[in-house]
Figure 1 (cartoon, rainbow, N blue to C red):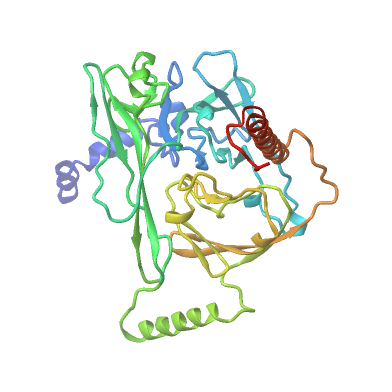
Figure 2: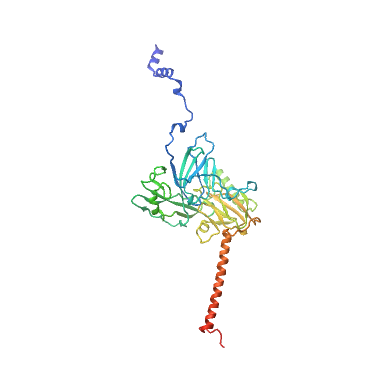
Length: 423
């Protein structure tokens, strides 16, 4: 009776009867949910609206790719629905020789695909548009509406000036404003470094096209395809902004106790290593470059939001002196994508170039400059055109001066306005 009362008073008998009568599949445990079978595919592709500054190198992930797809292609359209669609592949203007130790950072690649993601190198405003990840048989997984805003003419502010961003542009249908990125990390440690902050042009309007996925409602980059074309003329005078200030941070933060003393000892050895010439400061690779050719160096693993700095041997290449646009003509400069550019390499450019990534020494490039015996100058080369223009203008100037002197002598001889000699 005791057992019967326990059975009848407990609700377990209900569960037992339900388990016996119910089919086993109703209690099947699914270890991994297949999101592609649960979430329905959208009727049309949506686009993430993103903005970058010209000369930046950025990566676009191929999201929502099914696991059974082992290869993807990337499509590019300037304007959505246009017929000028093209497939993006690796385009190498300068081949990389891995046997000689030359690295990818010294070669100019337009596009690259790694682990299904698209990498765009030194993007330019004309490369703005729609980037779509899919397959050759017409499957589309993810799309981006990329706005690459020009860096030429950007408003640049140095030092610790309390500069305000450009005032908002308020119209009846939209409001344009500057969206500031966070301050980057100090680009060097234990020495004076610099921090950079970017300000991109954004627009807020209820008329943003609905096929664009944005982080905030009714907000999109000014040059994005999500912005109606009738708004674009009002945004022509909006500039990107770049703020730069000095900073200084230690390479290692002191800790207490035994580990703190050990860290201080390692830091002292690290400082000693800088003064020993035969011990490299960072992993260094050798690159041989032809005399007179252009060279672009990129810090390995650097992303647009990272802080990058450059040194040559013991010289600090600060942005205050080497940022592009600081002078009318700059042969050696750092562009807004943190790439070190050397136009028409000279023998004096030989040396070791170090790059810092987020305040830590990342890599070194030992540059050797040689004369290329196979290279022949052409009249269409920029250097040849510049040389011919210089020689031609000099010859015209000399000819003009010669004619002016003889004209003055002829006038003075015929009209006796200026007597040159007394008879």
